[in-house]
Image (cartoon, rainbow, N blue to C red):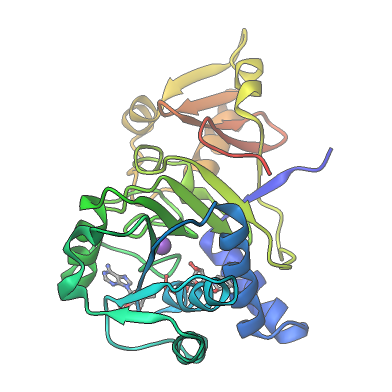
Length: 286
Ligand SMILES: NC(=O)C1=CN([C@@H]2O[C@H](COP(=O)(O)OP(=O)(O)OC[C@H]3O[C@@H](n4cnc5c(N)ncnc54)[C@H](OP(=O)(O)O)[C@@H]3O)[C@@H](O)[C@H]2O)[C@H](O)CC1
Ligand SMILES: [K+]
């Protein structure tokens, strides 16, 4: 059986870097990410793309190019000055292909748009949202449009799933492999549904496996230690924003010599002495 992988941000970053060094230019990976977002959602009507200054923003500019080539006229909102190298290339290309641009000061909850794509922050985000990024997230959260987050909802930590404020998405399109933060702590309450698009990155390390949520009950049977995330953190004294939940659950499983299941209302991490699994009821299988 082939499992979908769930990985840490560091694994994703190193795997990304090796792919770029060995065979695929970073700009090509970014274009594949954009194509993956386009293929994962039903794009209709007026589309706003809200971009930050890193490569998550770059995915947004590349998506603007893909949309232009498919007959759309997307509107770019730049929430921050500055671009990544590939981001600048795709921004210029998108503008030459006919994309429009509006200042963030005129975002006004993106009234008149059918879809808002959140490309503010991805795996490069850490800490707490501040300044213009915080304001942009608040604008997105006021919209009535359908919200798609690129890679991970802006404001959520890719490893821990912890946030103070974050984009509420209808759909999150994870890029490359699912990151652990999509399933932990606050994340399940901000993500409507999540899907992953492969972009041709082979992982440097296999970490965790995604299983179907319907299989969760199989791990909760006699002998398993089942608890909520809150109970888990409290009982073992881990801090949600600092601990690697998967490894901590594995540690307890080894110590207790039995399967351990740690659940939120919509997701779970399971360690069964052999593997570590993640599952969530908001994953869309593709
Ligand atoms: N999976 C892959 O292999 C690929 C992923 N891609 C996309 O790239 C992003 C990761 O891009 P990266 O440039 O590393 O980082 P981000 O764009 O997520 O964010 C960087 C900016 O974030 C700012 N930042 C960090 N923390 C905060 C904060 N607390 N508040 C506000 N702003 C913050 C940071 O600014 P600094 O001034 O602090 O430096 C950065 O500017 C990944 O998620 C994918 O979407 C590739 O496109 C394809 C390959
Ligand atoms: K994002």
